Every structure is written in C-alpha cells, then in structure tokens.
Image (tube, rainbow, N blue to C red; front, top):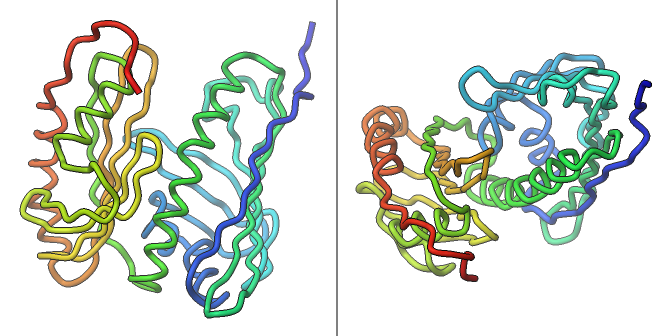
Length: 269
C-alpha cells in the first residue's frame, strides 16, 4: 500500500530587521548575502534558478527558485526527501517564502513561511520541531548582519564535535566553558573579544569586535546517540582570512576537549 504525503507541516513567523528593502534583499536573495549570515549557498538569481545550501561535509539541500520579485518576494523549494534519505513519494517538496515589507524608522519586516507535506511519521514532526528551533535564531544573525555588516561578504569558520550525553548537559558545558551566560556580557574567545548578543534555547550569538569583527554562533544538536556542538563564525575585514586560518584548529580542539559530565539522571533546567 502506498502512503501519500497529505499531512501538513508549517512554520510561519515575522522578524523586524534594520535596512532598506534593497539591503534586506541582498542578504536573503543572493549567494554572497546568504553565505554571510546563514549557510554557504549557491543561488542562480532568477525564477527557476538552482539553489543549494551546504550543511557540512558531504551534506547539502538542493532546490530551485519558485518566485523572484526583487526586492520584495522570494520563494524556493527544497527536496527534503533526498535530504533525509527518503523516497520522493513519501514527502512533498518543502517550500519557503520571504516577503519584505518596508517599515518606518529605516527597518523592514520579513515574513517567513516554510511548509511541506509528509505521511505523519513520528520522525517528521521531530524533524520540523528541530528545524524550527534552529531556523528562528538564524534571523537574530540576519538582524545583526544587517545592523553591522550590510552588503559585506563573510569569511566563514565552521567546526563541530560530537559528545555523549544529553543535549542540555552538553549545552551547559559549552556555554559555561565559553562564558556565554548572560546577554550583554563581554566575552573573550580565543583571543577575540566580543559581546553576547542573544541566548535562545541552546544557542548563542556573539558579536566579535577585536582583533576581527564579525558574528559567531554556538549551538548544540542531538543526532541519534550523540550531541553535536557547533561553532560557526562569519568574519569581516582585512584580517578575517588569517584569523579563520589560525583559529579554526584551536576551536576544533576546544570543542573536542569539552569535559562533559556523565549523565546522572534527568537533565536539570
């Protein structure tokens, strides 16, 4: 018996960001813009154009542009069946749409919708819940990018390491090790100084000030029997490439060397 994808899933929210519609469009509808606050991206800037988000070594999400109306509306589809190793018959394409609305005071409202259809399997709802948890904090990064670095292209740093244990314990360990305990607090991270801009669930956003400027995110993500700790930085300015080259190995060593306590029972809030 064939199961058809008729169970709906949907994420919908709006964010206010600084900038003109043209600046916001550059950030969300071009490959250099998306790569400077979200994921490394390949994007053909036209309706029907190819789209690819890189998600780590050997992983990526493929899709194409379905609506192209600069600087107001962008739409695209991704093949989340292929991303999850499922048959195309099990899942519909996942569609995402962005509508940019000019606001007073030099800001814009971005209305975001992502939806798709599945078969109602338990893993599907878990996947959408996880995506929503990761998707929304990305727009804090977009907000900071538009406030501090509009139109600039980032030099990326991305490292991650797996750990045994429950996600809450792993998150508390990396949070405390890096001093990411309160929004507005100054921090020092491998010789770079910055400020904690946002703490959201099990993710943190840091604005870097010296010796390079940029943005840095710290997250955890449970996958099967392990919890992955990830650091992703977007660096700007003439010293960005050298800092990325010199400091990425140190970040990798730090994440791998985290002393995560052994589980002793249920995670504490």
